[in-house]
Image (cartoon, rainbow, N blue to C red; front, side):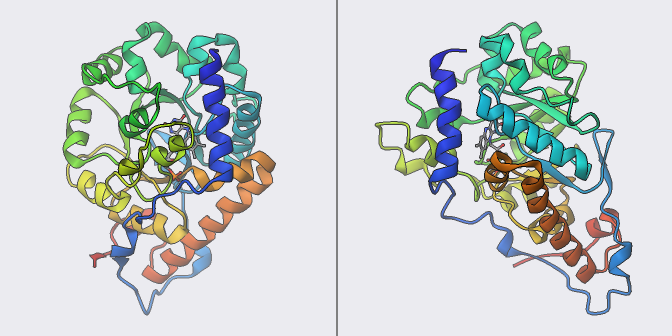
Length: 333
Ligand SMILES: Cc1cc2nc3c(=O)[nH]c(=O)nc-3n(C[C@H](O)[C@H](O)[C@H](O)COP(=O)(O)O)c2cc1C
């Protein structure tokens, strides 16, 4: 792997652990309320959180968003995340596999099937990389880690904020379309914290993607992260992006494919709101990073708290399962 890719991956982890890298603005979920049911007429114990996403069963509608790989630190983080995901019956994504394209030996730093044999697992690569490597190499990213699909990340703001970032995005839509045509696994389009609009989601469905991960604004700001690595002043775009709740509302109205709501999702109540609005899963990254440097148990503890909060919200709207939660009246304040 090139020294640049390697130092960038470890820099990102260090910065995310040590600095304030979140948006000042919110994810927008404070403007979303679920109709409270003063008489829920259900037993909290009977609440069932299980669901299916792209054909795979989840015990709860949570997804561990793509973070890392390519280095020793990244390998430990991925294994701890996967162990927690396996024990909770949820899914996860590995971080960008670009490092693996440069040095295939690094596959071990992304390989988690040994500890997560049954989890729904997504590989990950940048949309811009699709035009820079052979399609066979891109396709092999999924098989080499025995993943269930490939997330293509759209990270235009981050590329702008990186001195070495890709500033030419012409033809990327066609690259995604070509990959969707060739791949025998589902291709998922994801942002990294600036959100996907309803209009773009329609185009992405036309291109052949099988799910969309909103990754809106309100959580980790990648411009803020990369601001620590660049000499340039990028403060004018640190707060750029569609708040997650706004993007979700827009995308739900325009597409029928499964949706992951992510970007600043921090509580189980926000998960409940996202599902009621039409998301299939809710994902989070940054809050799991520190626990993942410690142990699978620390990751699990964080997620269990969110699961318990989600159940509280479902109890108060009288929803025994996620289908009933989806029918709850959503009030946009
Ligand atoms: C340390 C770290 C590394 C990340 N690396 C990647 C990556 O390689 N590929 C990607 O698609 N997203 C990456 N992301 C973005 C997340 O997957 C997610 O879209 C974003 O952080 C918003 O979620 P959050 O607010 O819960 O952190 C990373 C996030 C973090 C915190």
